[in-house]
Image (tube, rainbow, N blue to C red; front, side, top):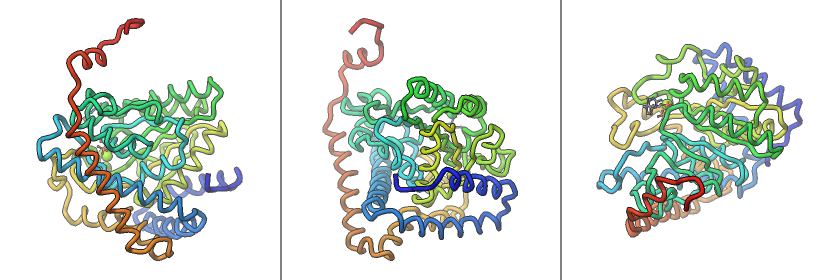
Length: 369
Ligand SMILES: Cc1ncc(C[n+]2csc(CCOP(=O)(O)OP(=O)(O)O)c2C)c(N)n1
Ligand SMILES: [Mg+2]
């Protein structure tokens, strides 16, 4: 772990964040962003070059992978849906970077980024998308059901909010086993208005379970603007209703996300209970690969968020801080493009599962092979 803070310092930070959230006007939010940007620059000075480059590399791999997904979907190679994570990479990468291999994550319908950031190979996700035997769940799950316990991806679900109470259950198991493992649950702003959000977080809070609830607030649930669907000003402030820290995070800044996640993970490992992070982010593309995302959003709004691109932002910082040259950045990008292309070639060349294999993966009777 790269962040060293005393417990008192950490509590102070959370309280301050909570204090700001209660009366957050647009102007205050702008000020907060400016402060966060200064503090994350300061923070970047504490992270070693290797970590910063790793974060950059991971984000660009997710970006190039998702671009390929759209391309192959439009070419008719994906027999199902896919929801692009483009623009939101800083959240998955920042959070998963502070997790151990045996920590678990629960993902949702926009989950390729979560799975890859936690260690599943892009090839296995692409294979899954194309319904191939080499896919991460044998080609039977498609885009929204990645799982691999060996990498700590316990499951992904298309049921909005469905992962939240299950994360609480996983946390209960961890607590009862006496391990130091933590469970992270990723979900959207839409999911934060589902009943299971309240039940799941409340139970985790009263039992002080090692769970980190990461809300990726991209300001839309399909075409429904978050402000129209949410009574509170922020989702983070709901943490106080359960007596847990609710932290508003600039989800377009991987260093801020990583820092907030590291604090929440430390709290969970210290048996102090769960945290709720609201990472404010934006999907640059439509809800799914079929959607332009421009019917219910203006081009200006999209451009404004694109100007905060987390990858460009970190890349610029790496060059300004002389951690990488523009040529290095280009080389990392080329490598990411190769990984994405390789995943497509691999998936295309892979066989479909046979009927027998599909039966075996679909119907399993206890005790029967
Ligand atoms: C329980 C449930 N209700 C509705 C849907 C249909 N649906 C799929 S994704 C989605 C929007 C989810 O929005 P959000 O939670 O903000 O996640 P985002 O897509 O923005 O990442 C909806 C309504 C569903 N899959 N499950
Ligand atoms: Mg959303």
